[in-house]
Length: 171
Image (cartoon, rainbow, N blue to C red; front, side, top):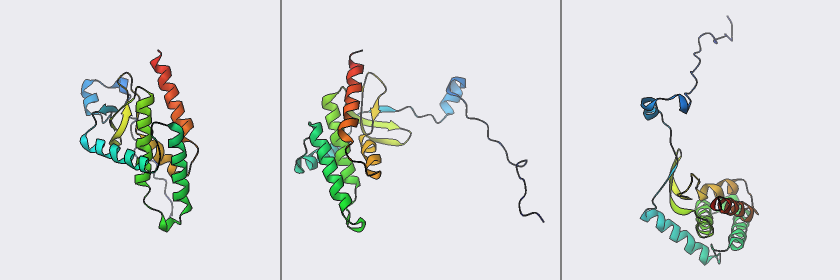
């Protein structure tokens, strides 16, 4: 009796996914392709933004000042990570606070505006532009770096976004 059999002959090989340009209109309707778009901000989203900005203000962080946002994020992360894991508060409200603070800065420093970004991952508060397909979910921007324990990134990353948006505005 063989312990291992070659089952390669019995395996079916999946067909490659169709390329967008190969789809006709009927196929395109049935294909689960999600085009990101910016939806209007709703009242619940505005309340979350207002709460995040109020929390930043209570922590003496000014979302109109990139240096203040950067220092506040680094200070908040350092304090949170210095706690024993069992004593740490939930990081989600902190991530949202700084994500929405960064987005507020971007809405004042660029042509990006508030909305709800609808993409393959769902719908979340974000910023986007009416002139191109640039969308940003700022809480994702912060969450990834929080999970990796990164500090010292806010000014450089947000500054790059501002610079790229300014470059697009001049075209």
